[in-house]
Amino acid sequence: MNKKIEYKESNVHKRRLKKPKNEQTFIDETDKQIMRELLANSRLSFREIAKRIRVSPVTVLTRIKKLESNGIIKYYATILDHEKLGYDLSAIIELNISKGKLIDIEEEIAKSMNVLGVYDITGASDAIILAKFKTRRELNSFIKKILKMPFVERTNTRVILNTIKEDFRLL
Picture 1 (spheres, helix red, strand yellow):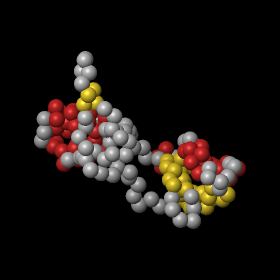
Picture 2: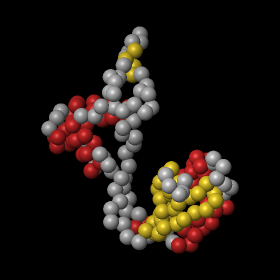
Picture 3: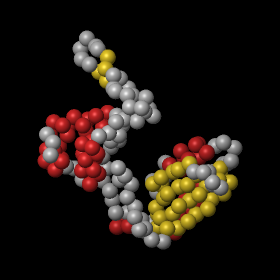
């Protein structure tokens, strides 16, 4: 169910109430077009986006501010070529964690600079880590560090041989 954003009067100006965390926001086709342009190149000006999707720059500005305030646009980032930076080894690491310490272990692992993603999963394992390394030695050290953590029962590591697609810009 899509709810409208409510406003409360203040003696100085109107201010937006915070949305409930898990509430979905209504996104129309104009919002989607703007987000596609930003996903392709987040350095585009509001004027250039407006020109490409045939709306006014004010519309683009208003829509982007709405998407930012609703947490749909979290931040703007540059996509790097990790292989050109020397990260030639990608791994998927499954974890089995005991005694209800899953979140604590995941949060600790997520602090590592090599970790791209940490996911709770269903099935035989409790979590999966997606990480990149420059050398096998780095990967080995990382795995051994994880295995030393209390409540980590075991790991199962898969080295990625070839990446066909790696693009998290979903819309």
